[in-house]
Length: 214
Image (cartoon, rainbow, N blue to C red):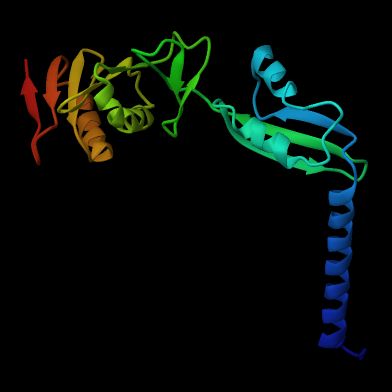
């Protein structure tokens, strides 16, 4: 039988690999940037691409960090990842924000799943979040939550009002009130599937009860 490799040999082999890895990464880090390759996690408009390219100065900067900070500072950018290869070419992967609704009293302003507001075009077909009073903007996050949990149905609008949230699903107006939206939506689907209620207003603002208002 052959001799087993000693643990000390395996440890030295592992340390050597780690050393080579850090030398390789350090060499890449100090290597001058010779070019950029911009990639997108999903298609974007030409205006977005031009906006990003304007942030990359000529001659090329020595560090990617200032460029990344400028890109992530754009309101419509959600995340930026980058990688520099051994030739000094930096690949920048940009993840844009995806709008899920537009804001009624803010022209050209939409919101994504994180509740972040940003400017965008071509959002006229998105659901609308109606906020009549600027003081009610704090309810925006809750309106976004309603749109996320009701993805399997088409909600045209969500109103942020003084007593909570209100929306319409088919011919039924739903008064959500505040809090416990997932539980309320599960109950709403059960009511909706029975076919007993096909129109009117369902009021979920009261604890442990649902009120049908015609």
